[in-house]
Length: 299
Image 1: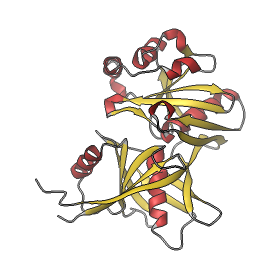
Image 2 (image 1 turned 180 degrees about the vertical axis):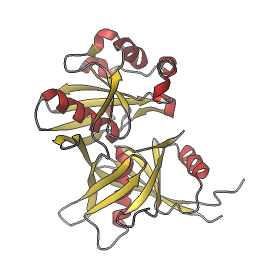
Image 3 (image 1 turned 30 degrees about the vertical axis):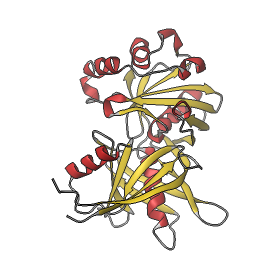
Image 4 (image 1 turned 60 degrees about the horizontal axis):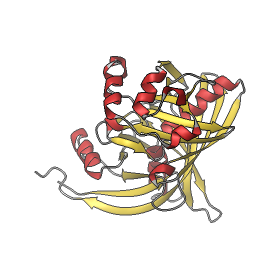
């Protein structure tokens, strides 16, 4: 079995060992779905991506994203990080990549510094905002290890929102956000009570001061106790807030991962379009490791 080269990058940060780490396999041809999942589990990051030739030649690549336990239809930092790795391999560097994912086409506008070096990108989420019902305050509080009175409902109740990947989104007080700690039993009870969620109950909590947001995301049932930066959760958050603000466009600066010692910075924009509310997420990337996995199929 041939070896497979991979690279890791830290995404949504301008310094190494901050942000959200990602492993990218730039040429995953020959790997089975089972082997991809095994590699993602072995690398033990929140996500690992596998790049394949596009099904439509007008697009840049087909990308499969795996967390520790399952394949994901779309995710933010894997989209930006994968585009960053692919762009730096090409000359001349493209201005935009179009990535095929199960949730749809993810457009990535690349960002360069004053020297022309690629430093990150901006993604457009593949779907407009959809909402899938409210979640009881008591359920959110139990999962986060806080009190129901810590949940803020002035702008919206806790609910499920998606622009390609669903999250339970809830606002909490700034003080409560700092002491959140996921309670795995409560997460299991929450997902068992909601078969329609297909085993997924990822909780995105935030505290907002105008256009500045602090956020934390917990997905222990997927093997991610806490995520340092979650583009696919902050995008629907921005879209949700826009839907309540009654304006045509809104931009937010989101800080996440601080409590984990991996500070992250995301620039999120939501805007009204013909097919609903759309969102973009932007951030920088820093390269970290390069390596190769040998004899993937060996036992």
